[in-house]
Image (tube, rainbow, N blue to C red):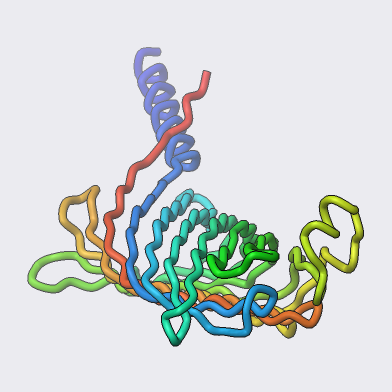
Length: 266
């Protein structure tokens, strides 16, 4: 009788441990600061191109379950740029916030290579303010886009330290964005309520954007990793007879924290 009870107790422990392993959720969060250059054109405000110094805050969270091949990827990106034209006589201030949420399917090869592919939804809100314009000095930026996404990473060791090289890329597919029409003022849109094709469907043809990240991860402790890398974010649009682009190049530095969660079960 006692032997049967011991066997049942061991079986229960094994099942409990397996259930916990199946429900285990591994979360990896990186915090990065970036500095670099931005190149901006918005023909609603000016025909001139502007460039200058820019800063970026990027927070990325990946959630994985060992029992599943799917990864949830979330990113928060905040940009702020101070810009001048080629003659240094006009200036602009540009800022925006982007939220990315996606689901990626992952493949593991030889415990060193990891490939992920799927899709992300990007929601963006921002502004461009031209200090020299008295009429319509600012341009609002609102958009949402579905973006096919892929990542590839390679683990290796150097000087007895664990390193990872990771590349991530997003391309636009379809979306929608806000834009005034050519010659239309914000007063007409919001005070008079004159709608003129201001919610514009976009595709990879009318808004051929591109975003990529290359990062090197250097393990400091089992739970903390230093990151160095490059972020390139190239946003373009040609809608309502207006052209715009924001080309961002950033050198990024930050750190990664990793932890695991076992959901509590009553």
